[in-house]
Image (cartoon, rainbow, N blue to C red; front, side, top):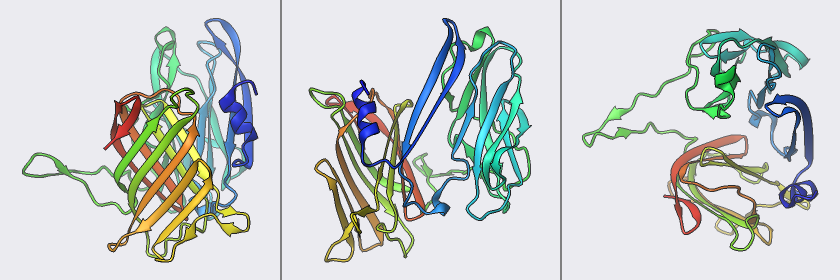
Length: 332
């Protein structure tokens, strides 16, 4: 409660869910407690919008040769057990078994001893009953430090294990088509965010009073209705920054997003510092404008910026390179 960002989250009316965990881990300074607190508000999100693998974890190192727990949560809105749940540990495939909960919504895990010395990449993978494959993390891998050479490993790596352990639809690898100018032509994707423009700025006198501005274009299904669920936003920036916000579906008894007279636009003012609008153009694409002030952003640095929007059971994602300009991180 003495930390302003933590206190703001604890007392925020936006969150309806809370979780906490603490584990004792061995460090170079002896045994220390590692703690986490997590906040959420998923009450208005339809079950089909939940990811197949919402979270995975590897227990901290206690001794050089002690095994570690590999655990991942699996969920299927259709109520079917998975064909396989496993961990890709370096070049190896490690099968995980149900440890808690139900086969359709439970925690799968195994105990694994890591040999050698260095930084070992780990990715969790599940194969749904219909053969669809999902991985956690989705775009990178968790690094596990082993031995003396693993004492200073980073948390994540983009060097993801690529082996196919079998049992599902192969993970597609896009093949770019060369153009005369030598640049690849991207494959059209209905879930892709286009024309992405993000501005992140710290507060001038208080770093926790920062500003987040997002402009993007998305192509949604014909029956897309942004008033039916909560609106979730996630930004990952400069490789280590992570900012999320879930905007509620209802303000009182009515949808927060109000349809305008044109019937092709929605607008919401959630509080004095937060606004969201969606406008559909003649081609059927939606333009999203979002502004939030009074935000804690952490450190800002040039690097890739990835945006994920989840609404009405659909998830849209896109990325762009961010550059530091005028004490802020800007894309586009």
